[in-house]
Length: 297
Ligand SMILES: *[C@@H]1O[C@H](CO)[C@@H](O)[C@H](O)[C@H]1NC(C)=O
Ligand SMILES: *[C@@H]1O[C@H](CO)[C@@H](O)[C@H](O)[C@H]1NC(C)=O
Image (cartoon, rainbow, N blue to C red):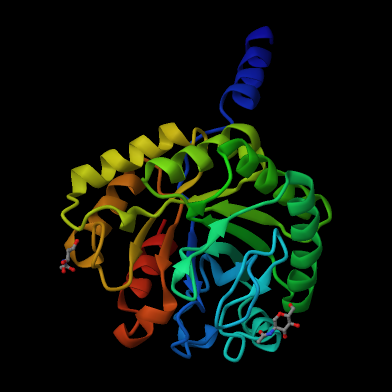
């Protein structure tokens, strides 16, 4: 009896990070204006499929010279092909589809898109109100954080983003949140500070494995994965590739073998792709292969 109780307590409290594969496929869409639509993509019904609209940015949406707006977000994705109507339509057609939005991104009008808050309180307040409007208008389900350039210290970033996610979740506006770091010193310091303080409100880590060099081998890829499991302890770290395979471990060069190895270890928490805009002309071949692998878990 006592032993059973100890066992139960052990099971409940000591194994919350129990490793398990997850049938989750995610793809960024809309940043490059190649007329890609949700309905262009293959969608396997036997997995969780997330579209991530790219991007909402806290800059003015003037095309000539966008300037920072301290948390007042505007939509910068292709709203002609990825409109609220099209969001509703793809979700009605495929019950396993969720649609979220990503904040930040690398650039705005060919300049770096900076995280540049005036203060924590003003940024959070502006972000909550502008994003509430966008999320309700497009009927979105989740949020992804993809700032890549910073004019704010790591603690400020952690507070702004952590508070934003917490508030959006508490208000029921988003059901899940992810972050999209990559292996750059400044980027890692910002996201790891966020993770230490607010990891409990972050559901997935979309780690940009395609930011590594394209000489990456399978053992190196596994090693990078292990490093990120230490950096984002307890996090569900997804593997990833870039459409044309020009960076990181390409799908044609061992990416899927690496995923198979992680699958055997019960550590394949999902796969994501940058990006649908570029895969469109390539026929979504590797998206299909990714989804077949995940659906077979
Ligand atoms: C710019 O953003 C404002 C406020 O969100 C919006 O009303 C306006 O339609 C947007 N303009 C363009 C060109 O996207
Ligand atoms: C690998 O990356 C280099 C630059 O980092 C690039 O010149 C080259 O084209 C890439 N190779 C492939 C196969 O995409």
